Length: 387
Image (cartoon, rainbow, N blue to C red):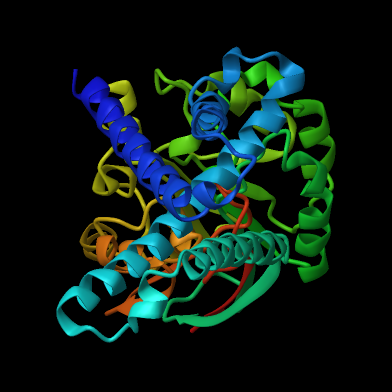
């Protein structure tokens, strides 16, 4: 019941925002176009909005050859909706203030041509932002960190980790996965970690994933100790089951850790947790970290993969030395980075609390709109020095 109320609320808000945008552009741009009829305008605008619902919510029910196109259009329109709402609201607030402060000359305030040009200017600016955001999202960067862990790790003095998160593999992204693999191999890491959201469950028909292509690419990853991953909220199906996907990840050489750990080279421990969202989807609690770590020798370094950077007091209390996370995308595009900063104790970068350290990645890919403004796609290059 709560789920349906949430969906209805989201649809109502999204529909309301689109009506707000559509009405503003009709009043300021549409009425100035002599060949454009109001009924035609609203029919076309409604088709665009409805197409975005279909492209995201009902994408799986479309014919295969239409899914990518509808999803891409819908994703871009989501980003456009955000920026159009911001610009229109700012202009409306300026005009509202002018009712009391009278700082806009009368010949400008009521000039329909200026209002028309303002509308065109907004469309051009939003278009430029989307183009820039797309280019920026495809510009994969390397983010280096050099950290110290005050423990001995057997014969290891250093550990070089390549960290990925939020790859969101789908038909749209799989074609560019080779570039990602080449960048990883260029780092020559000892260990490759994937901190959740390997695929995009937004498009949840597992048969639509090209697992053969994924297996071919992931098997090309070169590292001394292998590739390990934890699951993210987008890696589960609607029942919390990921068996089919995990089998394919294993065939691709990716070791999935689900509330369990592995001791590597008798030198350090690596833990992978179920994502917190698993509890809501499956109605089962994920294991407490203390239970997972019960038999560990805490004299050795302990590294934790947990997709969401939440409840940081728990790993700190249990003696985890380094946690790696993703999920936040650093908001992906402005102004959502302002929201993630408020929601998470750390939404991006590095934080040290006592002996506990955490690194949160902005992600290697995007979710939804393939746009990044105020963030970037990255591979995290971590050099750990044991002392």
